[in-house]
Image (cartoon, rainbow, N blue to C red; front, side, top):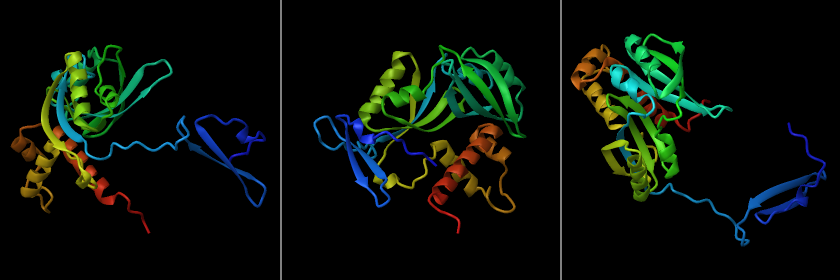
Length: 267
């Protein structure tokens, strides 16, 4: 519960605000603030929701964050969780690693020049969670994406760097992102491009690899009882590690549940 201030709210009126005081029956003052432009016109929300381009890209660079670890431990799949900037200015990243063995991964992690002070913060049968501090020279994709107005839809590790799915508001924004990457010698290769339109509402943003895995898993009876194919067999069929299969299934099914259950509420 907030306590009302004794100061008059309408004593500070700037050229970018329109204050309207309305007396209620109780005598309280209700203030609404509506932003306006400097010329007095009402401000409007700018939209980039129409159109746009969705791109699935493979990105690599010697200084790309955790890139050295990915190259030395290709059997472990990484999934970034979230990052935060401390008061010191350092950026801390939490990342989940999926795999059956983590000895080689952890050996690579402690010698990775793109991160500092790696810490194991949680462990599960099929995955572990780590906290790392980004080195000053470490390169990230998210900053360059945001700089051009793009949005990160999905990110996971690959044997040759990071596999990312990004949405750009326009072709020019995609071109600007590509030029930004090339300016620091980042390798960018396109797996898939598509135009985003109004029909995308409610469509699950699955990567091509997730779609391929779900299609094969469904066709071969992975979701049947009993199962017609195991995760090991799926891994052999698609030529990837079991940890990659487990991670892709988890994320793909999570995306499907999120799209199906979004907006529903319990009775």
